[in-house]
Image 1 (cartoon, helix red, strand yellow):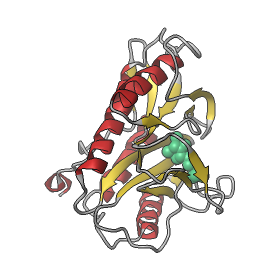
Image 2 (cartoon, rainbow, N blue to C red; image 1 turned 45 degrees about the vertical axis):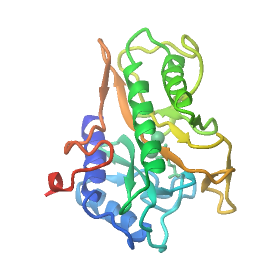
Image 3 (cartoon, rainbow, N blue to C red; image 1 turned 45 degrees about the horizontal axis):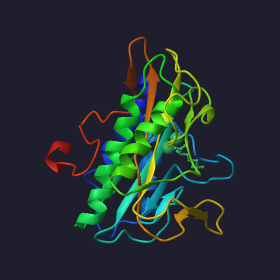
Length: 251
Ligand code: MF3
Ligand code: CO
Ligand code: CO
């Protein structure tokens, strides 16, 4: 899990200096595909339930599962890039937000709130806590900032399998759900909206968008429960965990 998580995080690091207005998301996807294959990994999403790409690229009001395409990114866009790499049979699943060119304060603030939501969820992980403690920490904070938590998608157990039990809801009450034990492996991947939480799936069968077309953001880490707390497998080796990414660090 350490190797898979680290490689997935390094793949997202690799993109930091490359994302710019005018770049199409299918270029990002091919860079991730090359990176994976060049490092002995396979993207888990390729041919997963009919999905055909190495990543999901979800722009602005796209909540998740945006499919890479030839359309160029625009100045001011915010985009989530989600990649899952299989290394030695183990899955490392992570996503981050990227700001394209100059982003306005509203989307920038959503990105900050969403990253903090993820990290508050991670901080709730320890033996004896419950999955509901994770969701409650995320929901309490995101809603206190006037945002909403998407209900239609959740984090998930993973390891040798991509999507396994338990479900990790990003909302709920403390003490609900199952009790966390050392050795459990799962993702936390809150999708936070500026408007209402409701989503719809486009006719392509994959792309999830906000019904009110307001902005949505997401960050995802793969974590493990340790004897004393939590280990994040997908932390950025370059410190590019949340924008603004200091580009000179990438050199
Ligand atoms: N990586 C996504 C997740 O966080 C799953 C994408 S499945 C796909 O679980 F088929 F849409 F790629
Ligand atoms: Co995931
Ligand atoms: Co993912």
